[in-house]
Image (cartoon, rainbow, N blue to C red; front, side, top):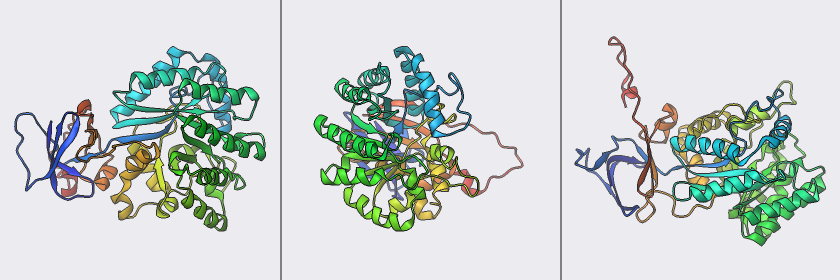
Length: 421
């Protein structure tokens, strides 16, 4: 396969990219636009980009909004209640059909790697078993990591703790947690230390729903970061949500950021979910309730963005488009300067790949030929236009291709020059 007239991120030239045996074999600059020969794929000046990575979603709960009842208050805690009512209806066929439909939606939108959380507080562990089976079945088509996630709290009962270990025995890739939902602060701290011990015992990654609350006194992030630092695990540990950071005072954050930087942990923000769920106890002014994405990034920490939910008890919208999530984040987190735009795709590509500890990721000679072609010439134009994913290739094989929509314009309308590209 040879792709001509392609643009690469942060580079002004056109490129020819050659693929052989499922790997990038050559990446060469062009002197100008080339005419396509037989077998060539003409990128048409569009952006060739590393695949999108979805670092935080709940496939076991996807597509269940309103079953058996809607989350009327819009709060995180009612969402957990509604999910508790849906659990008895779970079956392998139910989870499989919804998860596969959601994965297909993500693939259609350029995603080639997914980290999904699976509820371990369901006694049957049917979500864990089904998602691990899907992961193994699709391993040649998509990268899927399964998090053992104790939705109702790991320390809620001895059974909940045992089921976490059983989920890891079944084969979950990542150890999860939810310390702010435990009954007491002491139990929350105990859960963090226990889940990191499990990660060391089973040699797994860590991804914790951490301080997903507006309470400024919810400070389990410092416990997670300390434990990761003391055990030299930072690169393998992720703090998801951390929305309480939105409510921390700046003096505490100044101290906290030093710890976070030293720990080397990763962060996932889910801005569409957080802007919807947080601030629910406020009148006015209302908090945005999204973690300090811009400040974490500017401090040199690894931050990425996820959707979290697609049509489930916590979030009744969602469409698999990480570019939509990125668009929300740029607005909500006030990252609207040109330099913010110029590297915006990092939040849903390189940063997410680093969070998932993906190896050989990116467009480089010798790496697996996995990439997407985006409608736009750079990060800014793709973000501004919400450019379609035109092509998705994994290990040199096409897994998705989209024909650009044809738009008929009234003859008396002449679009401005910037809109013709």
